[in-house]
Length: 272
Image (cartoon, rainbow, N blue to C red; front, top):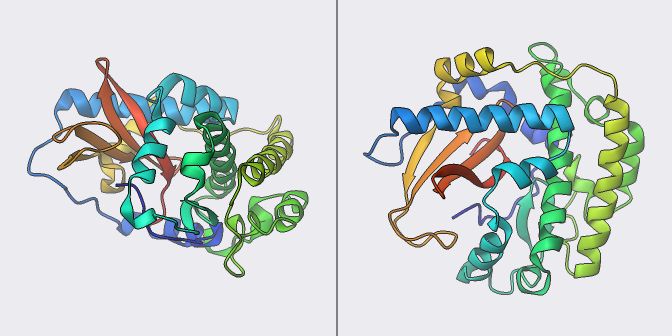
C-alpha cells in the first residue's frame, strides 16, 4: 500500500534527503523485469509530468491528462478499507500534513482531489526553489530561501499547515470537510503567491535529452517493477505497477489502463 505510517516530515528534512540522493540505489521488488517498451513509456510519462509542471506550475492539467481518471476514488476506498487506519486521528497525506481517517468516507472525491492538488503544488514549489540552487549551497538553504516570507507567515497562522514548512510540534490534523476546504483555500492562496513570485523567471531546465540521460546514468531514477500480491487500489492481484522518481523529486506510481501507462498516485520523495 501507499505510506500508512504517520509523518510530520518537514520540507527541511526533504532538503537533507536531496543532498544524499546520489548515494541512493534502487532495489528490485520482483524477479520479473521491466520491458524495454515499458521503460521507454515510463520515461515519456516522467518527461511529460516534469515539463507540464514547469510550464503550468499547477498539477491540475497533469491530473486531468496523465492520471487514472478515478485515482482519488480508488485512494479513498483503499485507505478506508485499511484496518490499520480505523478511527485513526493522524493519517499521513504529504510531509507535515495529516488528516482524520473519517474524511475518507465523509469528504467526496472532488474535495479530496482539490486538497491533493493544492498540497502537492505547494511541495513542488518548494522543490523547484531547491533545484534552482543546485548543485551549490543546498546544505545552507533556509525556509526563507524556499518560500516567500509572506507564504511562511500565511501557513504559520494555521495549526494544520504550519508543519508543511518547518516542523515545530505535531500539527493539528484536518478533521472535517470544512477544515479540508479551508486548508485547500489557504494552500491555493499560498500557491498563487508563489506563482506570482516566479512569474517571468526562468524555470529549471529539464529537456528531453538531459532527463533521459540522467535517468539512465543514475540508479536513483531507475524504474522499479512491482507485481501486486493482493488487490491494490481496486486493481486485481498480479497487476504490474511501475514506480519511478522524477527530476522534480516526486515519486510516480504507474499502471497500465486502456492500453496506456497512467499515474495511479504521485507524492513527494521522502528518502524511504
